[in-house]
Image 1 (spheres, rainbow, N blue to C red):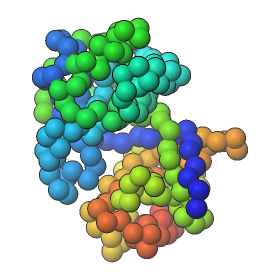
Image 2: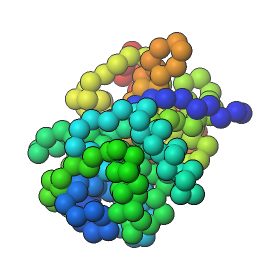
Image 3: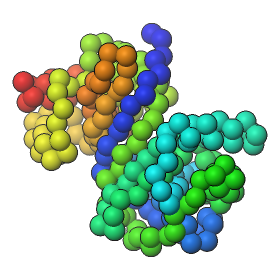
Image 4: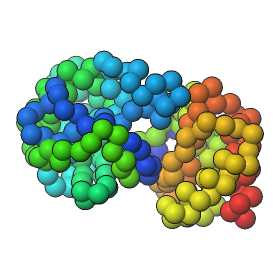
Length: 231
């Protein structure tokens, strides 16, 4: 099966960790632990960040993030993956750059400076608490393999699948639906987020499922329950 690269958006609610050291003074940056970290330990990745959000003082375009990230990688022998992000919590709504591929927390300050050099203005620190709950929206590229009708798999992460659903649901509907499904399937301990894929045929509504040692059989059961509830 061939890998497909597609643009899309993911929306999720996560408890994030403010980055207080190894950054430019008085700038706003947060760490999003892996969704699997709650099953192992949220603090197992002491030296290697999962996802880092560099918050900017004003919204930035996906195009500019991709262009700058490509240039930064080429000139500095890095392997950063840049995406457009937006976070919402009690203090308001902020835009920024979501980065994967940072090797260690001590690299964050130098990477911030590289993006500043490319014209990105970083936001001032918002001083949030540990494990602040945020709504996170990310525009990014997805690398997926079509396992079967309506089920996609990440070739880079065996614990990550995507299922397509027939219609749009808002966030409150998604939360209620997810709670119901988690109480009515044999699969336990899985994390979900809602999103969309963009392609030349339009928008496809999807749900991301993450769980340690997730199997296709588990995903089929979860998908069938979602489709049943949405029919």
